[in-house]
Length: 360
Image 1 (cartoon, rainbow, N blue to C red):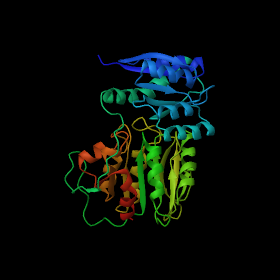
Image 2: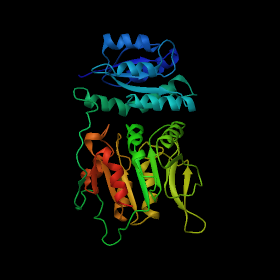
Image 3: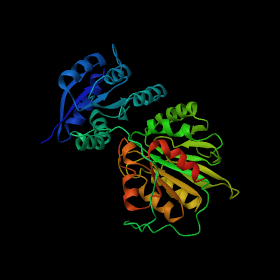
Image 4: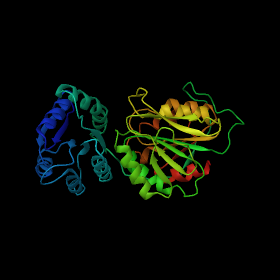
C-alpha cells in the first residue's frame, strides 16, 4: 500500500498531538516525525523526506515563513499545509505563506475539547490528503504551460443542463468568480490585470476561513487598480468594485427597496458542498438577478463547488469562463463544467482577465 509520509511542525505540544492524531486516523498516512520549530523541521525534512508537512507560522528560532523560504531552495520540497490562528496578523502571514508556495491553509480551532478539535482538523485535512495521494508519484503542481484561450463550441450538456437560450445574451453587467485551492496566488495575478475602467462589479467566492478573506481583500486592494473589499451585508453592488465573500459566511445578491439597485446579502445559511462561502450559493443569485447579463468564472480548486450554480447561470444566458488544467494548482472546480460542455472559453490564468473584459 502506498503510504504518505507526514511531518507535523508546531511549537505547541497540544497542537502537535491534535494534528498528528488527525493524520494518524487516515488510512495510508504515516506521521514520521514532529518538530517544535522550523530549524528542527528543516533538518528532519532533509532526513525523513516527508511528502506532506503541516506548518505553524509563529515559532521560535525559525518561523514558518522562514522555513518556507528555505524550502524554495529544495529540488523536491514537501507539500505544505499552513495551520494558522484566526487573527488579522495570522491572516496576513498566511497570505505571505501561500505566496511562498504553501498549498493550503486550515485554521486552528480556538475552543472545544481536544477530541473535537482533532475531528475538525481531520475533516479539513482529508480532501488535501486525498489530493496528495493522487499525485504522490507525479508532479503535484506542474509548471504552467501557456496556450491561447480556446473557444468551446456550444453543445448539449451531458448533465441536466440545457443549451443556452438563443437571443437573450447581451453584454455582462456582473462577474461572478468561484475559486479555492491555489486561489490567493491566482487572484493576485489575475485581479490586477483587470482595468481601472471596468464598468461592472466583480463578486468572488474564495474558499478561506474567517479573517483570512479580509487579509486577502486588503492585499489585492493594494495591488489592483480596482477597489477590492471584503463584502458586508447591505453593500450596494457598484460597477468597478470587487467584493470578496467573507470566510465562514454565505454571500448572495438581493434586490434593493427600489427594485432597481442590487445589494449584497451576507447570511449564516448552511454550507454547500462543505463550503461556506459557496460558489454555488452566489452563482444561483446571479442567475436569478442578471438573466442574460452576467459572466461566470470558475478557477483552480479542489472539489466541484460552483458546477451546479454555473448550470443555472448558463441556462439563464450567462457566459462561462474556466481556467485551464495546466495553470490550475488543482484541476477540480473547473473540470466538471468543462467536461459537461457548459463552458464557453477555457483560458490559462494569464488570459482570464482579458476574456472577462471581452464579455462586458
